Length: 393
Image (cartoon, rainbow, N blue to C red; front, side, top):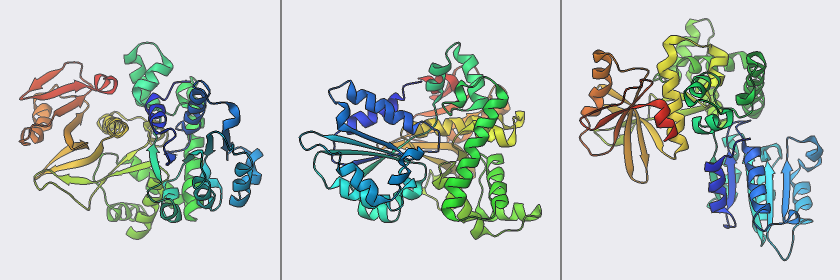
């Protein structure tokens, strides 16, 4: 088991703050493991077991707590009066009206509450109203490449080749048998699709939902719109509307299987409201549905770089510079960085194409071309960096 240090450090910094910690992310990305690692940290740093109440709502032995009154009573009966009680509620969205129990528990003294969920919908509506200003979200992704390399060991370049194909779901990373690994990933995919998307949004047309997923998986890194998706599916005999597509895509984003990236006008310094791109939570799922294709290497690479920038806390946009495009404009703490991503820039033509937009940006923020090439370069302050070096620095 690899230590999820980035997320663990965040929880440690937030410990005992009078705020609810909400860990969100796609199923099987490691949220339950993170809570266990944090519990272990607490026990190694002066906390005793009686101070911890831990419930995983995927465990049927806790089914009797799926009603919020029962959950509230169960926890209040176990609260300590003389010491802090740490409350861990894993996959809390399984509890109907859970926000009412969490809100009431939050009002009590000497409690520190941590909850996880696999759907962003839990952070909207009544929860947002009841707990506004009283929770902080800790978004979680599957393994980064650094975490993956630590888990599988061996040569880092060999690990990269595997990661590029299998992705970073923690348990899938440990399965050597390709058929079993595919079955495992297929289980994740269909659980997310049926439980976190279809059931939660009351979607009955699963075939249409899967068609939209496959279209977006096949168009990673391409600018799309709901109309474009609807028109494309209709042309293939699967008639639908832009509104239906928009609703389904929103549900997929809420389940953290897709991430929407808007566009940013670099010259006008404003975010644009149309024609976005979508990236997948894990490239292993894409390869499961679409397969490995040499022509897709650049887009898969782009997906991995996007996820890494997100892990590092950047707000990521697609840059628009006149008729040119910059793959990513990454912003954090008032600073920016610009990224182009390409499988290779060894040919003069490709290098000229990739560097052109970056040369037209006249500010002093860092500019990079991330590639699979092993030869580092630097032109006009624009650095060409190997993807493995970028992911491990």
